[in-house]
Amino acid sequence: MRDALRSLRARGLPLASAERQLAAVAAVDLSGTPHGGDFGRALSASGAEPLRPGAVEILQINLGKLCNMTCRHCHVDAGPDRGDEMMDRATVEACLAALDRIPAHTVDLTGGAPELNPNFRHLVDAAILRGRHVIDRCNLTVLLSGPQRDLPEWLAKRGVEIVASLPHWRRRGTDAQRGDGTFERSLEALRRLNAAGYGEGAPRRRLTLVANPVGAFLPANQAAMEREWKEGLKREHGISFDRLIVLSNMPISRFLEWLEASGNLAAYLELLATSFNPATLAGLMCRNTLSISWDGRVFDCDFNQMLELPARSAAGAPLHVRDLSPEALAGRAVVTRRHCFGCTAGAGSSCGGAIER
Ligand code: SF4
Ligand code: SF4
Image (tube, rainbow, N blue to C red; front, side):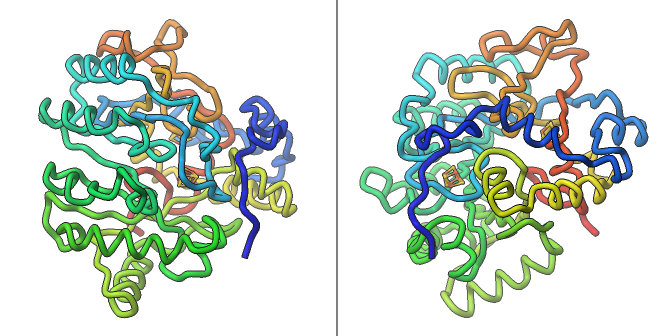
């Protein structure tokens, strides 16, 4: 059980500032860990410094920070109070124009709750018209509210993949992170998605669930968890889904707040740094994805976006979606900091999930 949470910004906390978050993580003494807590050194030791991206395969568009929920682990600091940070139509059109210049095969829509942006359906249709695969990163409960209630069928008709976050397939873990009653509402949304044809193995109705640990530890084995979740959700609730991705919690924003408040920050960062696994480097999402913020700025990933660390051209200039082109991206290196250990710990953590082990 927990009290309703509000965003860091709504509570006026210093940790709402990206600068403050970076400083809090950088201040932890990690001198006893293999690379002294220096992500650049870990990359160098693996022959991967600077970190070079490959071709952009996925354009991840963050439609804004407005969300119907306020989850404890949220790396976006999203919530109902963030309606002033929403992608407008002109920036949506700039994203679509960028798609005409770069060869990304997938458009990955995220937020906040991307469905709450009034331009969401236009963007989905326009991306599909351009032959792109579209992913909706959905928090499930948003599908139960007023104007979104028809979305399961609407998205199914268009073959949009749903990537839905659910901290755990049991009530306690989910409600602890997302608020009381979230688990029941998530189940209701999953039933509606199943009824629309999602989660039964059809390639154009793919339903992926995303889980993350409910605490300061690394995710368990992804394949074993997927088996457990599939059996558990089917047996106890009659719900199906196609695959499970497990992600580590990143030491930023509200999860960072929880780490500090619970006294787990140093131990968690040590765990991430000592679990550095060079085998995860090839699959890092920053190597095939670009992340666009609600106001059109370009980042190497959604985490860097929340930490206000913009992607930079080879000449060091920050990039805007208006300027995106293969030429503008040529020769750049990914911007990394200590939080990147969250992506390289253990079996790794990226939008595609853990590596096989
Ligand atoms: S974790 Fe997702 S659902 Fe929860 S507040 Fe953040 S954006 Fe919203
Ligand atoms: S946080 Fe992860 S995805 Fe982002 S730049 Fe660092 S390693 Fe890459």
